[in-house]
Image (cartoon, rainbow, N blue to C red; front, top):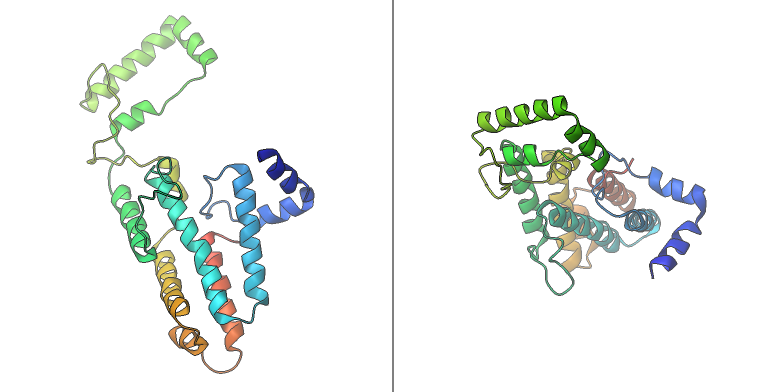
Length: 244
């Protein structure tokens, strides 16, 4: 199965793969944690949605298609940030069912973690050395003594035991993965407002075939209403997904 995926992806050629990768702003995308094949396939799907929005004449489906990929991305982001992706599958999901609940959970989780200090235990535990370097350090008495002295000073100054036990469950501190938290640093008030606005329009599109209700919700009037709707969806996708 994996080999078939590899063949399909790389049969596109370097130029097409390069084009797909160039669609995403690496500093602002929501899928940094995806494995390479999943990453490329996701961008491929996103590219198809963009083309669908550009070519479609169905306001309702334009909104729904735009919303679906945002909903999927936010849920994936939450699974990574809360570190529950190892438990969730098609039959069991710990996340709220509603988009509104998920977006509120994401915003509150990010805010809650940002305002806390980094867990001193995490500071201490995140330093790792390759075996070759570790062997060199242990064989060099001067370096080893300097590191041990620094470790003792660090532990004492942070009121940690001299024989540290790694406890990352103290909710007084920030315990979220720092790389994950850095990857969502661009998710500001405007980002969440745009996500909620798209969701509000999506609720109309999901329960009504009346395109005028969609236009009215977005304040779209006059001529070229369909083109204005497409512009809204494409702009929203660009902001929320981190498109260039």
